[in-house]
Image 1 (cartoon, rainbow, N blue to C red):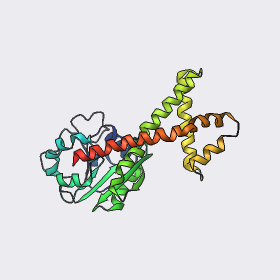
Image 2: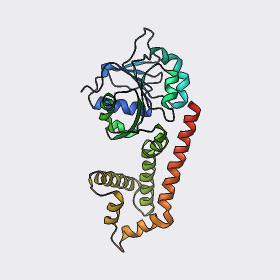
Image 3: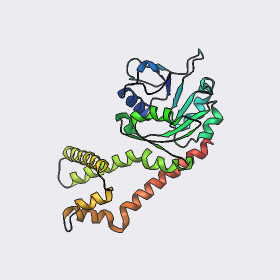
Image 4: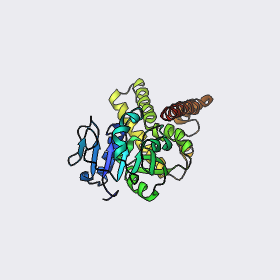
Length: 265
């Protein structure tokens, strides 16, 4: 399955970079077309070239995916800048690092900023994309095997996108863990409560994706008047507790993303 043209270099194969790589390989990407640049890369699939630094022979990628920690941007720039040509498509997943900041450091004219989340590893990710001088069809073809691609017209919205879908899996994992703990507190064996909580979220999410109604309507359909579900939802809805908690959670994440953007400028 051809999902891009030319050599693809992945700079950084940690949690997110590694998740994207696994998603691409599962979708049929030829490992021979991939070079991973990461001094700490380990346990990579066979056929992928792994280097601690860019090769000294002057080779240049068609597409360079920048997936290091945002704090390391200036540390890796001196080694990477010489191998990023004006025609190189630069795809950055660095949280908080704006396209203008990337263009000051690299010669690439075509720059796409992407905020993915970890489910990209299983083809169920969410990727918000904002690009400058990029072919949208080419970028979409690269990302589509990893999940949902949503174009963001205003780059200023990346703080909100990062908080919602970028950080969202971690928040959901915490919710699943809290459900399991609550089930154990009611007397279920902890391992069984964990399995029940995870399967419940998996099934409910699949149902919500396929349904024609919004999640709020689905919730009300489950909650019969005077029943146990309604009683539990009454607690969730009390004084707007759940809405307020999530609003404060996303706002905190968005503020931190804005702080990182300011630092990268």
